[in-house]
Length: 485
Image (cartoon, rainbow, N blue to C red; front, side):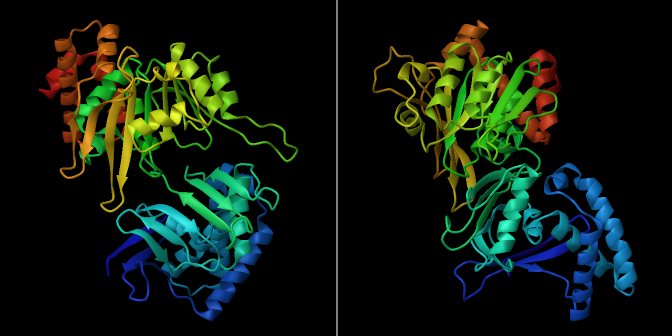
């Protein structure tokens, strides 16, 4: 056996065993359910049918009235089980109640793997294959959970869509959505996916990552974090790039507590992923798809243009994808707004090339509005994520060959981030807006490293605590440094 642990599902718990299987190419993720005899299983189905007839609920109401409905289902289920299965032991009773709630208010067996904090991805390829999961430690592994048919997969996709008032049908066989937990969902229907209906769920950390956690687990060095803090405080624009699953959005979210709490932030996303601390002045906005008549669509471009009329100090765009969005975003940079966004690219140079070539095609003169590039990398073999590059675009007076000046680089062999070059733009801009000399800028960076190291040492990891400590330093650096000393 490779591993075993319990998953807590509120009302009941299940054991998970991860084992090698000589017949399989990957390990098996085995969920151990309590065994029910045929009679108990038959009575369970009868209780389920009774509850369905007693409580009628519309799909979108489940997310809006989830806790209220859960309490109502629990009370009625307890009464039915007491009536029809009076001699059932406490553990089996809890399992039956929990299973009823999962099947009637949730996504059935999927709820079990969605509750496992060790998983990053949950995938259904068709009803002919078991559910597959991406485990943080073991990568892609196969579960012992199967769905009964293609209709059940389509039904789950419809439930997810209806909960946020979207539809997936034969005419619209693709769905991008999110669960009430914030986990991102993509679904496709046959014959678009040839083998059967599919659901892919990207799980997000329930509590947002913080910069202190990223420093502690070596994702970013304290030196780079101090520079990014200084740059963000003084309104420099940052673009975070990387491949799929490298942690771009998580890192972006971790940087946002560096924004002073007296500034207005507007975030724009297709699917809600960003979560900022309570103390920040933040307005989250999400796009909307058209209805069945093709009306009512709200695009990222609509929200971006509208956000500029809301007097934002900072704008966060979920991801740069299209030319028009990018153009408006870069125009916003040049009108004095600090902008933060993500884009798919593996290096700082690739990021630059993606921006200036089709389909995005942003004019090179606008690209200079980006102050810093941060590139994320994921080593799938070791299961680690790292900031692999931090770069900048030098001022246009530099030679054209120096499109990107790489300030910091990650070295895989030593697993360390080292300084590659001196900054020609970001530091110069900091000196200009702060009025500090070179020595004073270096001293300030050193002080911020002390603050970050102190928070790591004292395990200040909660997003609000991190934000408040950072704000207290910005307000009164001397007293914070005295406390640290």
